[in-house]
Amino acid sequence: MRYKITIIFCVLILSFVSTFAQSEEKEPYFRSPLDIPLYLAGNFGEIRSNHFHGGLDIKTQSVEGHKIYSVADGYVSRIKVSAWGYGRTLYITHPNGYTSVYAHLSKYTGKIAEYVKDQQYKKQRFSIELFPYKNQFKLIKGEVVALSGNSGGSSGPHLHFELRSDITGHPINPLLYGFKIKDSLKPVVKAVRIYPINKHSHVSHRPLAKYYTIAGANGQYRLRSEKPIEVYGDIGFGVEVYDFLNGSHNKCGIYSVELQLDSTTVYYHEMNSFGFHEDRYINAHIDYREFRKEERHVQKSFIVPNNKLTLYKKTLDRGIMNLTDGNIHHLKYIIKDSYGNTSIVTMQVLSKEKKSELELTGISVLDSNKNPAKDLIKAISNPLNKGTNANAGGKEANIPVSIYLAPMNLDSASISPNFVKQFSYPLENNYETENIRISIPPYYLYDDIMFEYKMSDTLINAIAPTHHIHNSYVPVHSYYNISLRTGHIQPRLRDKAMVASVRGGRTYYLGGAYANEFVSTRTKRFGAFTVVLDTIPPRVKAINIYHGKDMSHSKNIKVRLYDSLSGIKSYRATIDGKWILMSYEPKNSMITFSFVDWDRLGIVSDPEAGKSTYKLKVEVTDNRGNTSQFSLDFIR
Image: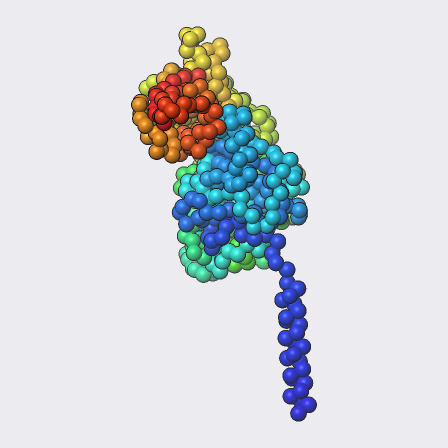
């Protein structure tokens, strides 16, 4: 009997504790920004062109117009409207030290919408950036602030959502903050790539990086070949891996990568946060050549000299392994997503034994055509001795002296026939001929390169030869200067000359200015370049209006803008001389005026006269100053 009473008492106590704990459980600080189930088209840290994705791309069921809610109490601190990038964007600052960001919106709501439109008409600009004072738009958690859309650089309807630290301004991984997104799937590993780091290293007897496919599934992977891979010298590894979330087929980014050598961690990174200022270092983090050429997202597990990303939490010798002891070594990747789902990759490598310096350099004392002493001194001057001290990765300025990355393409064992000069990443690098001038500031390369250049024939419609500056598979961190010789250009045409990149037989505007028979500009890429003249004005075409049309029952006016050379720089539209707001959507080359704004124009019409005639005028200018004017009369 006592035993039964004790059990009942314990059950009651546990029930009370459970009930009390539930009552004390706090509601998550952030709510969902949408009132539909959250499925992701992209996540935080996902690899994109020249940047890491800074937030979550939340699917909106392939449509626009879903209500967007403030995820917590706060106030509107910034509003930006642009035809590019994030499109219509809203920033809400919260008391807990974070700012939430909502991008690609179709429209703002309520007083926010009125304020934005008032400012656009006041400044007579579609693109605008506003910073309301702190108490101007105070919000409560769950208040509707906008409608979802597809504005700016979006490729389909969705909400781009971010959390940013108010202290640093850096984006923070939202998946770590309790949003209800289902993810029970483990990262999917596609391949491992192994890199010989310098000219003395090799993988499977060749001085070339090699791509190895993976066998396995559901979090357990291994190389397809069960035989250990033979390697020698300084070696680096990379992994091609993607994450998938429940209910979505989109490839997303992973949260952390750890690489162990014989149970010792030699590389580890986490995707908690990063600074926008370091975004472009992604091109040093990934295998840029594989990304551009094969569209593979291979993430290196070693840090090249000028990689200053701060996501590296632990590395040993910057992740580069000296494998010269003749033993078999066991490597293991431990890869996780933001919810802790984990995948493991195991592999074995056979480290070949270290050779003598003479064998290493391929020198034979019996070869009378070589100078063994001179070549040996040259080889020894590039030390391969490695330290064993751990470092914090890319955020440390001190690069171990043992890290000698030979100035050569890892995928090429020989120097290109177009080689002209060695470029060293810590130095300013210049190259000049009678036809071209190139100047790259210090630390704009991620590693030393064997710089290549050649000149080919002039394209049709170009006024300069095509200049091939190195190759498009090597990244550049920021803008460097190029000047291309054109010879004499008539004064009336000089402001029409522009440098253009050449890709796939097409030219793409870069800009530039003419001086002393050269056209100069800046670019962030290597590749092919030429100079063309743009003397053709933009084209303007009415879509839903024509001269004399009655627009009384129309909701808007739509006009299409075209410019195939330098691109649209600006446009201005008026009705009877009054500036009108025409929203620009570059994806379909369309500008649109909504008749909702009609009363803002202050046009006085005679009610007794019935419908009146009005004049629409559109003026468009491209990036070389060519201008087109378009006008027609309509009835309303």
